[in-house]
Image (cartoon, rainbow, N blue to C red; front, side, top):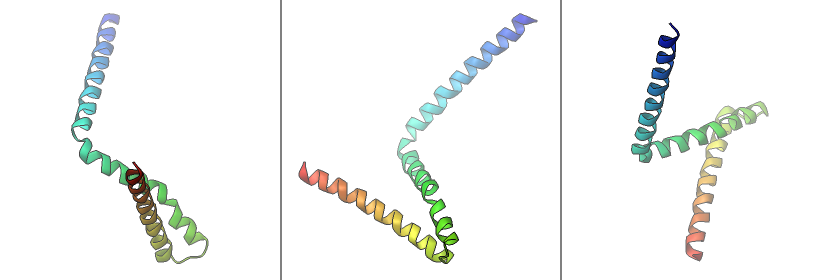
Length: 90
């Protein structure tokens, strides 16, 4: 009975390892699609508390959301500007 349990745990470990290899390979193949999706997800999660906080401070919900979108836009333009200046100076 113990040998059956040991074999099944070894088989589970091998299947789990193979599954991880397949998942990582698929993610590597789809990196051009996954990168922007993950960046947008991280950006959305990090900015999500801002409109709620602004709304609790008394701003209308539409204005709080507009300010959050403008902040994201300013951050993206700022990073793009930094990259452009860096490339120019290079």
